[in-house]
Each structure stands twice: as structure tokens, then as C-alpha cells.
Length: 178
Image 1 (cartoon, rainbow, N blue to C red):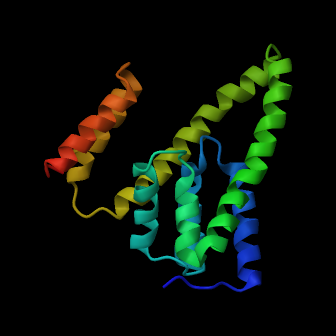
Image 2 (cartoon, rainbow, N blue to C red):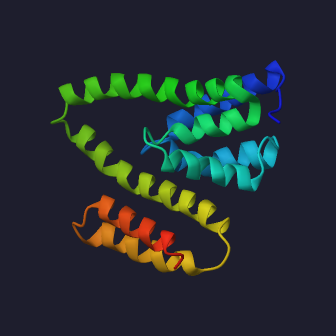
């Protein structure tokens, strides 16, 4: 059964997702650790299993990466929760991205713009590692590391397309090897 949240909790959730939106450089998945902290640990809206399943379901579905936010919101408070979390995560980042892209494109030759773009890479990588850590901690055993670590190294060091690695992971999982 989906819980009904009071308006104050919905407003707090919306406000938190507005803030997370501004940190989600590289996509909403990079702020999943803080979503976990708020929705599972602090507010108790989701269980560990629901949080992990929300990400898995949305990632397996066709469409944008950010769908997991709507799935978590739906599990927490139905359609209203889905709307609150999804609009909260999309509104600021979409507006800021639009304005910044127009400004940066017009000034792409400035040294500061090039330095800013180069400085974002380590931030995105660190946030992705934190997300992987949270999701990996929910997976029992160690066999998943036999697939995750080589895949990460292949993405980093080779020009193998990511879709081939995703397909290989799907086949390995389907066969029950991991």
C-alpha cells in the first residue's frame, strides 16, 4: 500500500530534490546516495530493497535515466510523490542547464569556461563511484565485483562501446554466473 504524505513532508521532499537537482552534474543517478539518506534513512519512506529496486526497474526500462526518481516518489507517496520528486529534480537543473549552455556556447573560447568544463570531470566520477558503492553494498556476495571492476576498466581504458558491455552483463546475469 502506498502511503499518503502530509503536505509538509511533500514540500520538504520537493525542496530537497530541488537542491539535489543543482548537484546532479552527470545525471540524477550521481545524487542517489543522498536520495537514499533522505528517503530511506531520514524519512523512512522506502526500505533498502525498495530503493535498490526503484533504480533497477527504471534503469531496465527504456527512457531517460532519471525515471528512477519518479519510481521512488511513486513508491513513497503515489502519483503525487512521483510528481513531487520528478519535478523537484528536473526543474532547477533543466533551467540552469539551458541558461548555462547558451551562455557557455557564446563564450566557449574563454579560459575560465574551458577550465570549468575540465574541472567537472573529477566531480562526476566521484559521485558515480559513490552511487556504485551504495548500490553494490545492497548486493549480497562478491561475485558482482568480477563483472563491475573489469567493465569499469574497459570503459576507462578502451574504446569498446558501453552497449556491448551492458549486453555482456545482461547475458552473464541471465546465465546465472553472477
